[in-house]
Amino acid sequence: MRHCHSHFFHKIRFSLFLALCLIGFGIFCAAVCNCADSNTWIAQILNEDHTVTQDSGQNSASAAGQSPSTDTNAAFETYITELFRQEASANLLNLHYTLKNPQAYQITAYQTSLGNYSAASPALAAASAENILSALQQFDTQSLTSLNRQTLEILTDSMNLTVTGGNFEYYDEPLTPTTGLQSQIPILLAEYSFQNRQDVSDYLELLTDLPRYFAQICDYEREKAAAGRFMPSYTAQSIIDQCRDFVSNPDEHYLVTTFNQKTDSLSGISKNERLSYQKQNLSILKKQVFPEFTQLADTLSELQDSTINEAGLCHFPEGREYYEYLVRSATGSSDTVASLEKRTTDQRKEDLLLISQLLEQNPDLSTELKNCAAATQSPEEMLTTLRQAITAKFPKVPECNVTVKYVDAAMEDYLSPAFYLTSPLDHLTENSIYINQKNGYEGLRLFTTLAHEGFPGHLYQNVYFHSVCDLPIRSLLGYPGYTEGWATFVELHSYIYAGLSEDTASLCAANQAAILSLYATADMGIHYDGWTLDDTATFFRAYGFTDEETIRDIFELIVGEPANYLKYYIGYLEFHDLQEDMKKQNPDTYTDSDFYENVLKIGPAPFDILRNYLLKDR
Image (cartoon, rainbow, N blue to C red; front, top):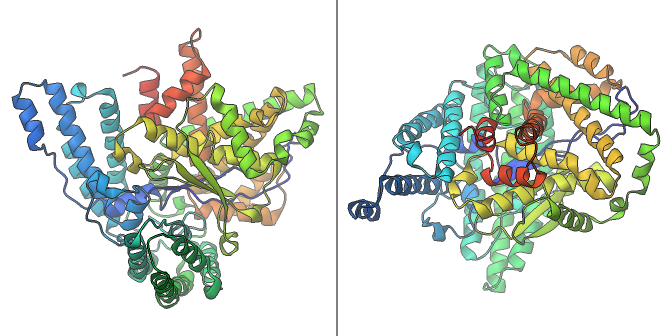
């Protein structure tokens, strides 16, 4: 699936005193990433046996005497183009959020379904990935262009991860408090655009497929419970509450109002057609969709007593190994968990030292925040300020529009403070950023959140990359460590764009990075080292967290969303370290502008590959 990138996370807010009277800003700015986690969705649609093919035109070119290199590149591009068509058309949400005009990509047949989900999905995906890996080995990397070689290496890495994921039966979890399918599918349905009658018909057919899909999810959860892998009871309760809230006001539901608004504005249909569509939508929602959310809640309620592990993944038989796989998938880093734990601790010490030094030099730095000019702007004005501020150092991005929207009240308790929903590959000009008003984000906090979601964060990175890379397969290879790491990296640099002094901006960035690091350490501690709630409380108390209810909320959120915090912090650290390494390698010629452009042109990738190309190891 495309980015609703991602990515739905809670941000628990505190007034923090990180041993050095830090400024309270909250944990981190979250984005919405792929409509389900990208590995999850690719696992569902990798079900074809792929082979390398060449069309007659390429064979003719070879006979005409073109070089082997040309033949190899043509064959590779043909292969990945066909692979893209197969993957993108395998379920309707995937296709709709990937392409506005599938016919232009020679996609004329597609499944109007949500895909499939079962215990066998990871193993089936692994088998298909092995077929793809076998096909990729037939291409001589030395004969490929730089872009094609990068793509082959990234695709190979992605398939290797999929193969690894096939080793863990009943560990995958489609239902999580903030990134689960039960929260992502409604948003994607609400944002589903209508250009013509076919879109409306496809949408309504997609709704009728939800009972089948949710029945598969319920069956999987029952099997998972029987295997002793069911989610913690408090996580189940959170999802149960979410499902019941979703169906609490059916007549005024946002899936009713958004559908009516979209059909009312659709040209070329009569009033009677419009009313007929709206009647069908309401009927399907009431008779098929809403009852399935209720059934999902009932199923989880029945299974709550089967929970045997209320803590981290490491308490399951293969839990540590599975967490290692999740960390690699989430972060794109090849470092061991132990190495990441040490790197996180070391950077936190550096940030706390910087905060101490800055406050010692000027104890009144925090007072500057009260007079921050950007804090009084509207969200739209903030995005304009950010777009203009980055022009000096960041490469030019094609003209694009962004619409600020607000999360429906029914979902406010379960969605992140803000998220970006990516535009289709062939329609990069229209973009949406959602703001969750219940979080109370305003002023400087909202400004940096919009930097994360908009410019120069997710929106900017997505539009820029797809404007310079014409290989659509790359849109299906999700690397959240890159995308969330980049958004966090630039978010921490965005304080200066708000008009703060350099020292105040550095103070704010170091403070937020230090907070992020606490959650990253806790994530690894809980899921890899076996921290209990008491262990977690002891850790946070050392940094000024004393409220027991808050600490429990943190613990339960991390247990329910393993490795999710690492996307942000470890991804950020990888960019931070890569930038420092480039400065050391090119002390006389390094510029931030070159670093940004080089990173953005390569696009989402594992950090080993990114590092090899940027530091010229290839």
